[in-house]
Image 1 (cartoon, rainbow, N blue to C red):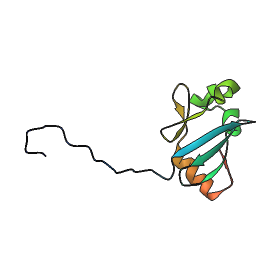
Image 2 (tube, rainbow, N blue to C red):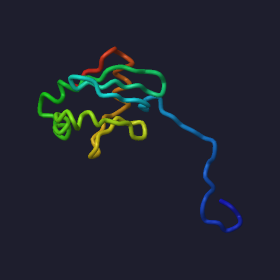
Image 3 (tube, rainbow, N blue to C red):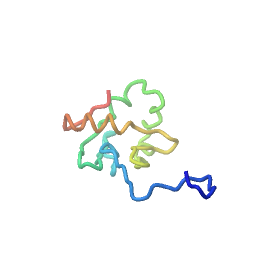
Amino acid sequence: MRANGNSQSDPIVGITCIAPWQVKHVRPLANFRLEVKFTDGTQGLVDMARLLARDCGVFKSLRELSLFNQVFVDDGVVTWPGGLDLAPDTMHEELGNACVYLMR
């Protein structure tokens, strides 16, 4: 704490923490697949067709191809309008172990 009575703490400058599982690129592909690339160079395909073919809860709206294709990266996370997103750490782990990640 500063002795001058300033109640605000100084920000930490020059420290950047990037988790290896942060997504840096996503592109929608045919048949409800996503091409994803992570900050550490891990990349691959996420096949969401199986997930969307069953009762998929909040992801049900992504069956609409026009919405599915609006995918974007928000703060390192694969996201769609309306706040739908995929856990990037799980995708990263699975892609590190296989060429194609199939949503269960």
